[in-house]
Amino acid sequence: MPLVTRFAPSPSGLLHLGNARTALLSYLAARQSGGRFILRVEDTDQARSSDEHLQALFTDLHWFGLDWDEGPDVGGPHEYRQRCRGAIYQEWLSRLDLAGLTYPCYCTPAQLNIDRKSQLAAGKPPRYAGTCRELSIEQRAEREVQGVPAALRFRVPAGQLVSFHDAVHGEQRFDSDDIGDFIIRRADGSTAFFFSNAIDDALMGINLVLRGDDHLTNTPRQILILQALELPIPDYAHVALLLGMDGAPLSKRHGALSLADLRQRGFLPGAVRNHLLRLGHTCTRDGWLDDEAMRAEFSLSRLGKAAAKFDEAQLRHWQKEAVAHLSSAAFQDWIGPYLPPQLDAQRAGVFAAAVRPNIEFPADAKQWAEVAFGTLAHYAPEAMSAMLEAGEPFYEAASAVFSRPDLEFKQRIRELGQATGRKGPALFMPL
RNA sequence: GCUCCCAUCGUCUAGAGGCCUAGGACACAGCCCUCUCAAGGCUGGUACGGGGGUUCGAAUCCCCCUGGGAGCGCCA
Image (cartoon, rainbow, N blue to C red; front, side):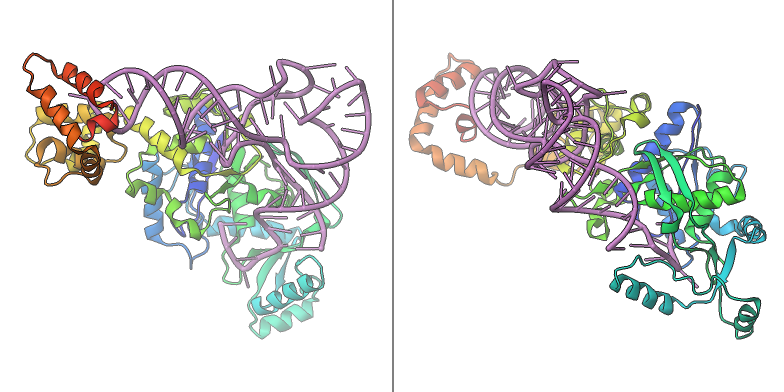
C-alpha cells in the first residue's frame, strides 16, 4: 500500500537529530511504498515560531538529502503552513461545536497552574478540574460581558475505550476516563496541537503517522477528535526516542546534536543518515547504504521499541565510509577550501587521491597540504621525542647503513631494523 | 500520584521455546602487513537487570520487583 506520510515540525528551533531521524524514517516509508511525503509546518504558536527557523529547516532537510512532494515551498493541493489554515480549522471546530463536544473555558492560566499543583500534591492526576464544563448559559454570558478571554475545550466522553494499533508497539488501549478535557483552541483564537495536527493529517490524506514515542499517550485524544468528526484515522508508528550520549533524552543541553551543528563540523549527510537509520532500526546488511539501498532496507517491522543512544564513535565510522563513497570530483570539491589556491588541477587531483584515506573532515586536508606543498617549519612533537628516545647508537647504525651504496631503500630499512632491533614506528619515527 | 512505554556485550543490535557453549557491526586490545599515519587482514575479551512461575527445555511466554522514559500544558 502506498504510504502517505508527513514530517510536521514546528519552526521554533534548530532541527535536532531526533527530529531528523523521524523525518528520514517518514521519508523512507513513503518513498519505499511508492507513496507521498509531505512537509507541513506547525507554526500555530506565534511566539515561538520564526521565519529564520523555517528557512533553516529547509536548508537542513535539503542538506540531509530529503525532498518532499508537497510542502510550503513546493506547493500542492493544500496550504502547508498551519498559520494559513485558520478558516479550515474554524469550520471543523464549529462542527465539533454543533455536536455539543466543545465548551468555552474561562479559567486563567494561573488558576489552572494552581489546580494542577494541588492535584499533584494530593496525589491525584493533574487533569483539568472541569470548572467550566457545566456552566449555565447565564454564567457564560456573565463572563463574556466581563470580557474574560475564553479558550475552547474538547468534551472528552466518559467511559469510552479507545484502542488503536501501533506499528511498533502493537495493540494499544486507553480509557477515556483517564483523559481530561483538553484545549483545542487557545484564547487568542489559534488552534492547539491535538486538534490542528489531527485534522491536518486527516485532511491531507496521511495514512501513516510516524512520530516519536512521546506522542503515544496523546494519540487517544486525537482519535477521539477524529471519531467525533468522522474523519479517517491513520495508522500510527511511534518510534522510540533518541537519547544523547549520556543516556538522557535529547534536549537543549545537547545543542551540539543539531543537524546544523554536525554539518558545520564537517560531517557528510550520508554519514548522519547511515548512523541514524541504524538507531532503533535494524538493517539486513552491514555496509554503507545510499538513498536507494536505504529505501530497500527500511521496514516498519524492523523498527525497534527501545530508545537508542546517539554514538559519536559510530557516526565517525560512517563518516569515513561517507568519504570513501564520495566521487573523486566530489571529494576534491569537498576539501577544496583547504588546498593551496594556486594549485593546478592535475596536481590537485593527484594530491586528493593520495591523501583521501587519511581524511575524515575537510579541514584535515590542510595539514597534508602543508606536508606535500609547504615547508615543514617544525617537527611534530611525537617525532621529536622519538628522535631523542632513539639516541646516538641508532643514528650511528643508520649512518652506516645509508652510507653503503649497494643497497635499495627497502633493504637499508631492513638492515637497520635488524641492526637496532627496532621495527614499526620505533624504527620509522626517528628515521 | 495516575495512565502508558521500554529493558541482550561499553554502544547500535540479531534473536518471534530447542538451530544460543547467544550472532553481527562500531569501539577497544593484540598480531600481521607496512616508507610513518591512515587503510587493510587476522585473533581476542566483554551481554540476556533481579526474583518467581509455565515447560522435558526459556534471552524468547506469564507475574512481580527494580531501573529508565513519556504523557497528564492556552508547547508541539
